[in-house]
Amino acid sequence: MESGDEINIGSDNEVNDYYGEDANNTDCNYDSLIKEEDSMDSDSDSPVAKRPRLEGPPDRNYTVLKQSDIRERQENTIAEVATVLSVSKAVATILLRHYNWSAVKVHEAWFSDEDRVRKNLGLLPIIEFPLDSTEVKCGICFDLFPTRDEIVSAACGHPYCVECFRGYIRTSINDGPGCLMLRCPDMSCSAVVDRDMVNSLVFEEEKQKYSTYLYRSYVEENKKIKWCPGPGCEYAIEFDDNQGWDVTCACDFSFCWNCVEDAHRPVVCETVAKWIGKDHDESETKTWILAQTKPCPKCAKPIEKNAGCMHMTCNPPCNHQFCWICLGDWRKHRKCNGYKEDKEKEVKKAKRHVKKYNHYYERWAANNLSRQKAVSDLRTVITEQIEKLGEIYGKTQFQLRFILEAWQQIVECRRVLKWTYAYGYYLPRGEKAKKLLFEFLQGEAEAGLERLHEYAEKEVRQFLKDPEGSVNFEEFELKLKSLTGITKNYFEKLVRALENGLSEVQTLIEYWNCDLCTFANSWKNVTCEMCQTHQ
Image 1 (cartoon, rainbow, N blue to C red):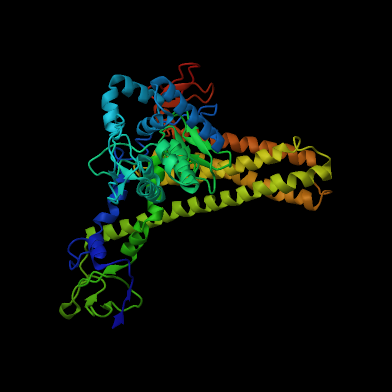
Image 2: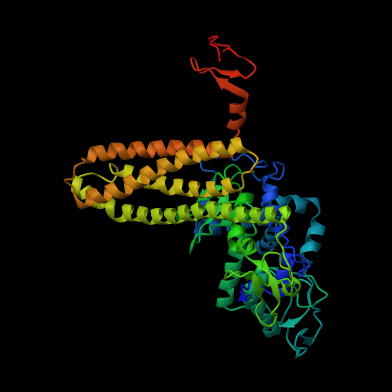
């Protein structure tokens, strides 16, 4: 008897959920595995079929904002609202935060129904303490205070001693950005605690924290501005329109403003989310387990066969004995040589799915690593190689700019090529014509990129190592410029085709080009309409 190797992928409940509700069923359930592949075979469910067209405008449609720019804009917006509505800056700040820092929305709501806005935001009329009161009780510690100087309150007039109110505000500030929505400590009261009151009671450390929360809220609550997700970056990006989501921060980090993932043109955000989800979760690991293992019919733990005998024994404490082929109880087992067509098809489909994913993921990951290396090489070109080549050949940095442009093209093309493999993975299997066109365009672009990358990588090093080599610098410059231009054209065609959903396929299906004059004729015509040449 051979004992199988148990592979632990989670709790028993997780395994039961994965293999099906009936874990003791001897027929392995592959339905959950192949659902995704079936959906890719249907045009109606295809993420490619539903792909919106993304037109990247020639001009930059976003603005990079420094910390000083953000603070200046924030203060200007607050001042504008305070002036127009004749309110304090503290009240204007509360209004703007509620309406996502949109002055237009504040004005519309305020002039439409000022009383309703005040009531909703806790901007209550100020209530003074009675002048004849001799002692006032704090609503938190319940001590009596003889003078009004020791008592403070929000607009509602609920009295609290200075120390208790200060402690209440400091605790709220230390708890996080929720302090920006601070209300009166009285549970039944909705009066707001504004910035002026906060600054009058807390110490400098808490003032700085509160100011930072308020500053960051201008970006995080603003629908047109987002933080750059680059490592350690403190810039923000203001987006002007929704045409072409890819943006590049001043820190040189490129990302999609819509989904805040790495820049992924020409692939849409929905495809990127699905692809990244496959990489982050355990779905593909479980897919491999389902394709390469079988569940124990008793405990449903996945078992990998590690020897030749078909007599399997599950690990303790289960110790169930079963047949590897049919999963039947070994004590009652006789023979299982009968062919079950449906089950064999499901197993093959599961294995095909794993093979397909591995094909596209391996190339996606390889181009991702290659791009990271190209970014590192680009930094070396900027900081070291350009200067050294200038000294050797007596060239200015402007004259050597073509090397920098070549490496920038390499970095960008690696990014595009990486995401085309995610695009290819989700192409429906039924669209063979689109698949052929996609692979042709992708292959041409990839080949051009490899020629450019190899030449830029090796030849620059060769010139630094041996300035008196067989190739003169003018020939190198001419060839590198040529390869850069050719590669750029290849990738522009590829990006354009993918953003248009490979619509060129329809044109190729509906028309034939005349060999003599290249006129596009309908397939209904057997002779060219332009030159009358027979098809």
